[in-house]
Length: 105
Image (cartoon, rainbow, N blue to C red):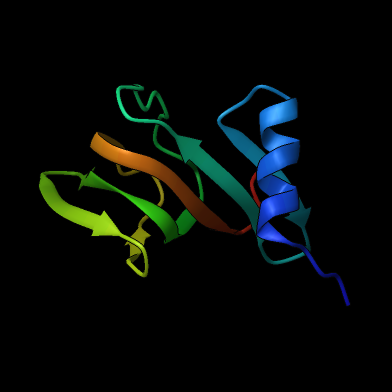
C-alpha cells in the first residue's frame, strides 16, 4: 500500500517550485498533482497517454480539443491521448489530481 496526503504533496510541489509533481508511477498508470494560480498560463502540450483529471479545489475553464467546460471541486474529465487541452480563466487556486495510462515517461 502507498498512502499520500494532498497537503503534503502540494507542499512538496511548491518546494520544488513547479506546477506539476509526479508522485506515483506504476506498471499501468501514474499520478500527479497539478497546480495553477489565478492569472497563470497553462503551457502543457498534448500527452502520449490517456489522462483523467479530478479537480480537488479551485475553479477554471478547461478546453479539450474544440470543447470547453467549467470545472471546480469534484469535476472529473477524461482527455484522450494526443488531444490538445489547457486550463484557463482560473478564478480560484486550482489543484488537480492527474492520472495517466499508460504511465507518463
